[in-house]
Image (cartoon, rainbow, N blue to C red; front, side, top):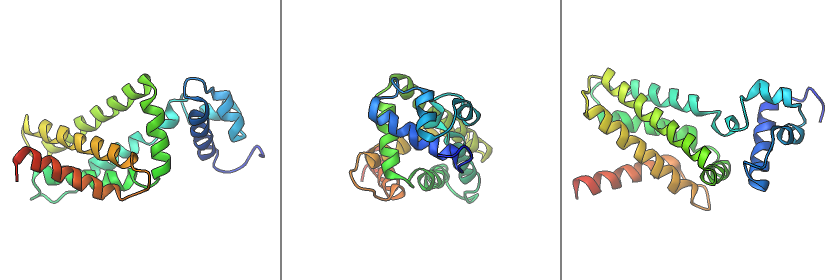
Length: 188
């Protein structure tokens, strides 16, 4: 592959995922990722701080999209409806590449350090949603409660979705998960 081939970042992400699946995250080096992608290690570090960042590169975009959707929910929306709007935006972002998401989740689940990082990401999402609800006038502890419930729905729905062998609609899975939570907590 030529030095100036386009989409180096995308090639590195694909190469990293292939290597993580083939030989494990811990056993994969940045040099191997760069070589498979046809770039130098220096190019890798222009795009990613380290090999973990390949798996978490979209986290900030996801967080911003969730908060923006929450902020844009109708003013009359209940706190749970506003969080549901955020989850719908999250589903649109996360639900695009089922096979890639399945691989990514398997790599994360197999590595305690990556799993911890994923849980920290979820905690940041909950904190951001709670802050967004507070901006909408929802007092604590209600803002924190609804935000945390939203993250539980996100996590359970995403796990359900990635564990399906064939792609389905993540947004529908999130709505079903939210309905199950509401039914379980509130009763029929």
